[in-house]
Length: 58
Image (cartoon, rainbow, N blue to C red; front, side, top):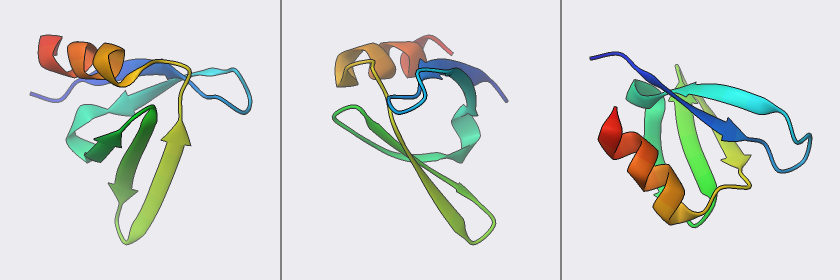
């Protein structure tokens, strides 16, 4: 199922939605996503445990 998680970007402090299908890695408070051949890394204010909890509920 296509779903999104909401995280807070560490630099801008803005809330962003990330499509869970695009997430390829979660380490600490850093999420790595891909779109085509481009890799995006987001540092979040959420902890690893909080991110994994959001991913497991979706």
